[in-house]
Image (cartoon, rainbow, N blue to C red):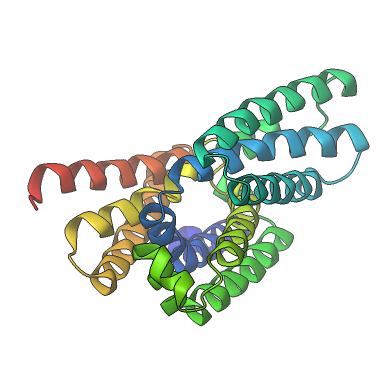
Length: 264
């Protein structure tokens, strides 16, 4: 492992994994406790439509993914404010943006980029731009989640009482969806838009399962996320496996182990 760090691609991969381990577990805790797991899946898959838009326009697909993901997050927040169930909006946009991606790729006459990397991830392909994007999103994530930690916890476990005490729960939820969209785009080259939803769910689900307090839940979320990311990255290096899939498989095994060995 130490020897392979002589190569820049390995150093970038390790740096990317550590950055993701810094902010994704905390975000995952709120995704799970606020029941946004399916919403995270919808936003992650909507990025495919943005990738296709970038291909059609001849620009960096990341820019297209950012635009579409943020747009989808805004529509979800607005629909929720108007009383439409989140799972309904997510189901419609999930299918719609995937269909949009297929149509745009057909109009583009094929792909000129490696869509496999964006769909299923390859952490070994991270560039300096990808690391800067990850670092910026990590700073934004941690800044928002830590600054509004108490309000997020309050509105998560008792939204009506939080609203009565002046917490703007709708605005807070919209901001969380915006952060979620940016996180999906930042991580898609490392894990892929198809698999990133796993990293948005299993750390928080493990933390919520094995702990009886929100502080313990956040700590266990971090432990699960770090073990999955670093362990999956190690398996990818040593066994020459797809990096994104390796991370998600390790995380899935940890979740299954929590079901078998941890009884509430």
